[in-house]
Length: 318
Image 1 (spheres, rainbow, N blue to C red):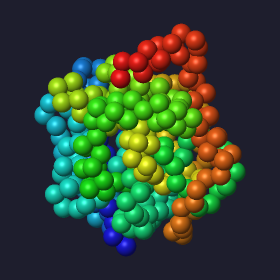
Image 2 (spheres, one colour):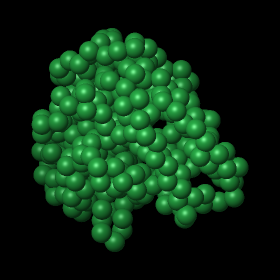
Image 3 (spheres, rainbow, N blue to C red):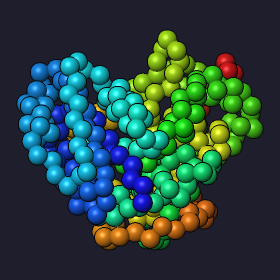
C-alpha cells in the first residue's frame, strides 16, 4: 500500500503532541510512514515554557516511523502558515498527505484506513478529502463510511491537485453563487450555519477570525466551513467513517479555535479500537443521518428576527 506522509504543525502543547505521535506510532503502517513536524516560533512569552518542552521532545528520539523530519521556525508563522510550510515540503516528494493538528489521538487502524481510502478515491473527482473524524453525533451505524458535504481538519487525507483547485476559490465565487435566490435557498436548507457564514464572507465581513482571509488578494484561508462552502458550491464531498477514528483533546483551553464548553463530548468520544480496517465503498447517508449532522452544526445558530434582517440586507447588497 502506498503510504502518505503525516504532517503536524505544532508550537507549545507538549503533552498533546506526545500523545498524538504515540497514537500514530501504534499504527501498523507507521513504520512505513514519513512524519513531518514543524515547530512554530512562539509569538509571546507565555508560550515559551511549552515551546522548550516541544523542542526537547522533537529533537530527541521519536520512534516507530520510517523517517521523521523536524523543522524549527525562526519567526512566528501562525497555525495556518505553519501548516502550509509543511504542505510545501511534502509536495516536493509526493502528491498526497495526511494532516493533523497536534491535539488528536488516533485509532490503531487510522493509517490503514486513511491510506486505503486515499488510494481508492484518488481518481474520483467528486471526493475532495478523506476525513478520519466524525463529530460526536449518534448515527447508529458503527461500520463503513459515508459521503457528506461537511469537512473536519482533525486528521484528514488530502491530494495535492485537489488543494490546488481549492486554492483558486475566492470570496467573489461565493458572492456570485449567492446572487441567485435558488442557490441561497438550497444552501440554507442544507445547513443554515454554512449559509449564514457564506453570506458574511460574500459581504466581505470578517465574521469569524478562523477564516484568515487575505485582505489583499481576497484569498480564503483554511477553515472547515470555508471548505464546506466550497464543497456545496462545487458539488464535491468528503468521506467520513461512521465510527470516528480520531479523538480531539483540544477542548481544554489550549487550542486556537476550541473553547472548553462541552469538552467531554470530544475528549471522551468513542473511537474505533480495531487493529485493522477493511476498505469499503462510501454510502449516501439516509435522511435521518443527514438531519442529525445538520442539527449538530445548526443548533447553536441564532434565528432571531434581528439576525434574519441582517442577513436579508446582506443578500440585497450582493
